[in-house]
Image 1 (spheres, rainbow, N blue to C red):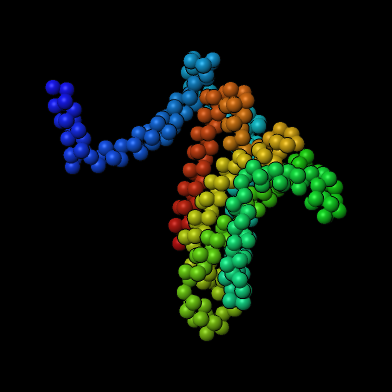
Image 2: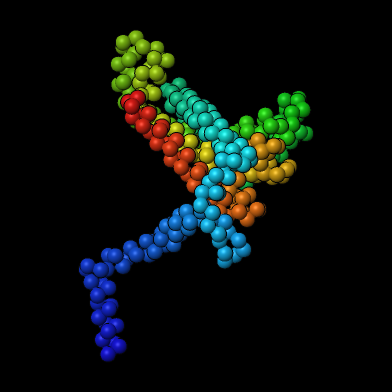
Length: 298
């Protein structure tokens, strides 16, 4: 009887109606365990205060209220907005200009330049952070080259620019590759027709290149906004070697580092979950506004 039942089950699972779902079920099982469950649990956790290991007290919106009352968390969100704006303006502008120069007809060895600019993106965050933490020391190579005595890692003014230099060094090459690929898709006859009409180089760039890169620009703006809000590795590694991983007076603190400190240093799991959901909502709203404004402009 058992053999008969096992055979029937095997035939049922391998039948044409059920077999496709059996084959794709591992993905959905793993997705439910590592994707859906953490999201649902973090929502539940954000409304509770964890006491001990197995006990959690319901506190309503208390954790969310604390997010907007704690000075260090507010500073972290302010810093993330600063990082996002600098990411968008700095990285996209530099990457676009370099990509245009590389793709110009007068430049030779274009492939070599693209590889050279992309290599920093292959360096790990930890290695880049350690490298720049040494470079920006008061008696480091940068001050020696500039013949200055700037306290890069101990200054509230320079802490965020230092983080952006590290981020830009790693990621500008990536955007150069993206923009270079997009520039190669612009038909040459656009520029030829503009030349016949007497357009100069700036007019060609403004009226042909930029409009043709509209969708790539939107992608770059959205991704750099998300990246600015989700910074963790660069500020953490750069400042860990010298002091707390937030910079002097929280000047380099980010929301993700605030989540890490709340969860794993202070064991405020509910508060950390609340910071995470506030960060997620702000990121979604910021990217949504950018996409809508881009559509209206179009």
